[in-house]
Length: 107
Image 1 (cartoon, rainbow, N blue to C red):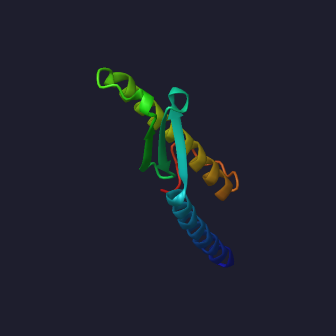
Image 2 (cartoon, one colour):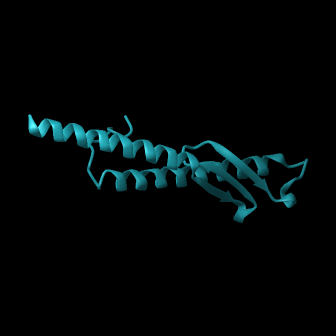
Image 3 (cartoon, rainbow, N blue to C red):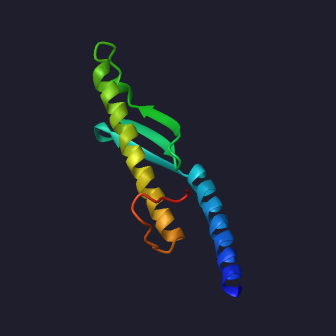
């Protein structure tokens, strides 16, 4: 039973660190860009949009498709960076523990 108590304590510590990581990701801001930086989108570490910056030279009422495509590309770039950062933070938290395929933390 001594081992069970230690396992429970470790699980509680891990849960506390997971909560801290979730808060850290929420506060984090990651910016993606497209068009050589003409369009920038900033997301939180949890993927929530925070800012959009568009260079005025791109605003052409007769050609909105280019701007729309660049905004989508910037969002996808930021999202990829958010995912990479979250994975790095999780790897650091779990000490490189390899989880089975399809099993992600937090559950």
